[in-house]
Image 1 (cartoon, one colour):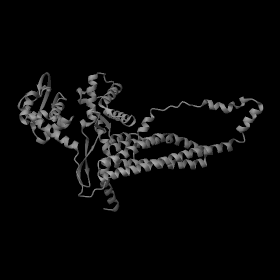
Image 2 (cartoon, one colour; image 1 turned 45 degrees about the vertical axis):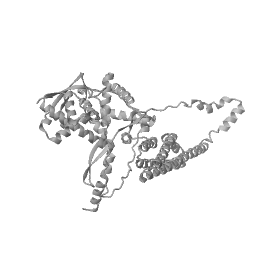
Image 3 (tube, one colour; image 1 turned 30 degrees about the vertical axis):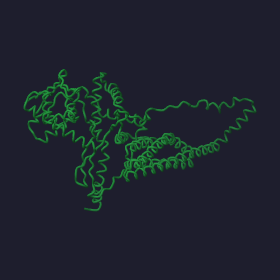
Image 4 (tube, one colour; image 1 turned 120 degrees about the horizontal axis):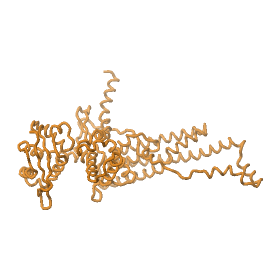
Length: 507
């Protein structure tokens, strides 16, 4: 193998994992985009484009989280999505149906509270790895659940549209704020480097305008005007964002001291603080250079006008002539243009998209890990997810076995079997009630179809159970659910379940 081939193979292997991690922010969108609503309410909403809905919801979260600086409650999301569905897809304004549809879409966007997982091959270790990402995150605030867009969600939204020059620093600042709040200080360093790169580019651009002014004053003034429109007017907003992020880093440093963060985390916060201060100094230097450029340009233009028009027109002579004739009307030609100034300024709403969008440069460098020192991280939600899946498999197995033996089964009878199997402690297990809620989402189940195309979290568990047990009777099992709202099953002093009739079909 030649040297060039060796370098090529080395680059492919060495960069593959970093590229796959970078692609993770795109994975949820295409998974949602391929998803069809024809499984919900007998397909009456299948015309809804989940790709459009996803982008609209992300834009809504960016507006609320980044520009209005407030968390999003589920009620705010529901009001937004219901208006969108009625306006853009002509959905009938039925409050109950719209509410159920909004909840169903939200479950898909949040993956029912779980991260989006994708697997990829890691050529260095010759093994499969699992990536994870979210578009929307949740938390508690004032005893209520609130939602925010994740940093991956912001990066994905920004990647989907080219941006104008004036918006790059501002949008990078919004992403930096999100990373600091999520304690991703290493990612924040990469964002600051991109901000510094943009500031350097603007410095070089203003230097080029100085050179152009010295050669051709009129072309230089046109370039300066374009530069002012695309950069100078955003300085005040950018400086406010710098101040906000510097205050967030300062609070992070205090928290690190109070809570005794690990040395590596503390060093990352300190480095972020230093880099941010350097970026602010460079940004202020750019503002000073641009201000000085404007002054110099005005002086050069005044000098050029004097040398260009002195032979044919002199304003001082014009004034002297008006005084000699004692007729002020001669000055009308000088003053008339001043009364035609356009004082009222307007701002196009379309510029908001330019402010929000950019294509950030991916300069993040992965941390070097020596062979044999790799660590496997198990996240809390992974542990919770595995526990829920295990419990749901146990409950499903009893349901399937009973339906294979009996054609008809009531939930009250199934509930008794569960209590006999797991004792009455099941009455205090939240996974049991979550299982019943998931099971009640549909009126019928066909395990053969589910095995090929699981639609919900519970159907994924059903498919796992069938594949694991390789039971032919499971694969052929079909059953329906008939809800009996008047028949209640007591599970405590003030709690009850609505009875359900399960009926086996086709066996």
